[in-house]
Length: 334
Image 1 (spheres, one colour):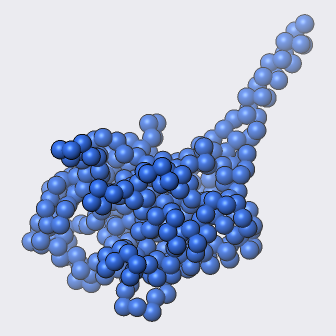
Image 2 (cartoon, helix red, strand yellow; image 1 turned 90 degrees about the vertical axis):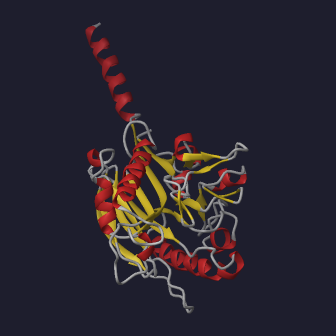
Image 3 (cartoon, one colour; image 1 turned 90 degrees about the horizontal axis):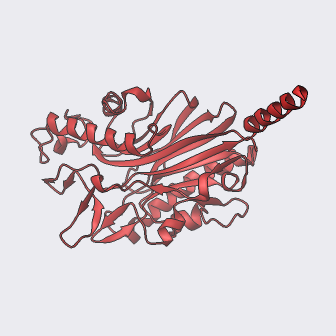
């Protein structure tokens, strides 16, 4: 009888171990012009100085750091995300200041950042928690344009989750729509083509590579640059990718509100294996928008939008003009 009870206990323990799951959270946040207060003579950042048009004082800078840290730390309940990608950070210094804030200091974030050729000096970057992500290497991918415009490089970071699974992460901030959506579309298409060529090269050597793209693409999921050029069309065809923000976009949700219209400009896109696999996959095959009321502005008519820091020269003291987005990746032994 004792042997039977012992065997039953072993079976229960083995089952629990076998069915054990692990999770990581990856977020992306366009933080709306996170500048320090120092004038850099190599970029056009004069507006974001105490004497500039924005009257960007140290007090306002510190408030923004603390506000952003609170947002990032609140995206999930138990801990800050394992990975956070950013758009619109001026330099490495602002990231160093951000991770020193009270809400993020315990996360032990490490920084991946490279300067980009943007005229205002805004870059993309990535923070990672080394406890859950083993950094391997990174590089910046320039966008070849024949126009006068200089756009942000794509940041490519390679690393390991769950001690076994290599991931290829790409942080993006494509050309804005300033100057007209159609007029600037060719530059976003070039961003998409550059990214697609890099991913195709990775997948040609490793067809089942775990790829995750995040960023402010300044286009919505059904726009040509994303849906056609990048082939993030959710069709599960060879060479295609899966945009986990597309379902939310089709339901009318967005991350940026322009004159009352919601747009899903911020996207997370993954390789198809991350929605097809039963062992390593995106939770519920969908991304999430963090749009808590306390980071939002509600108009007199009741319309809600991201509570921004500035509107033109006017200081509102909000968080950002974009909502952050995030995804949960699950690994199971089932």
